[in-house]
Length: 114
Length: 111
Image (cartoon, rainbow over all chains, first blue to last red; front, side, top):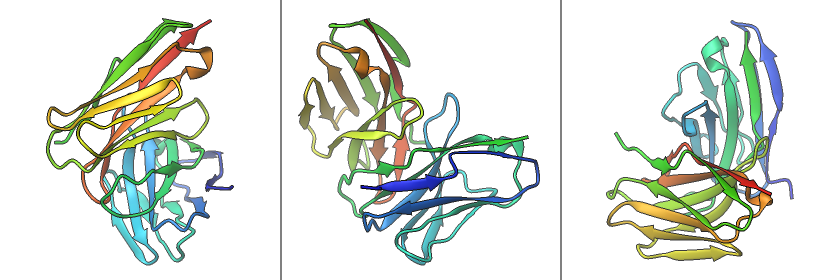
């Protein structure tokens, strides 16, 4: 069972470079999201999607773009990397709806911007 | 501002000890409360999803209770083992697509 797969696991970028973090899930989940994890803070939502073609901003969206062309894939783009974007990024997915659906997380992507 | 707080931030216990942590959340706009176990360099793994006031869930030596009226959930670990060492994370679901995560309780079980 693949679950949620995100790549790359580690990346070092120079300030101003762009890159895409890939995320794919094979559970046919409607809801997908990207979080960042910083020391001393809870997971913070960057962007989310409730289905193909539908995306919305989370708590900390600036500097990031997303798209959802298929149910399976939800890439996160850093447009012009800044040191403040050094963080651990987690992709997550679940069934949508008001009930308590379990969230499944990818294994994380460690990004350093120098 | 909706806030989810977990206490303690970190905890060291001896093997065999029982322990518990707290997740405090707003008592309004409650949809669900999630608990996750998060080992270093791995992805958070779901332990429990709780939706009803008074819910009690159990998985082996780990159990959780929920009080939505006063806004707290307890996670209990009975007879802690070194393999229980991890960060325990709670997430408060406050809308169809809105989750607020706590900062976690880091547990270290000493052999």
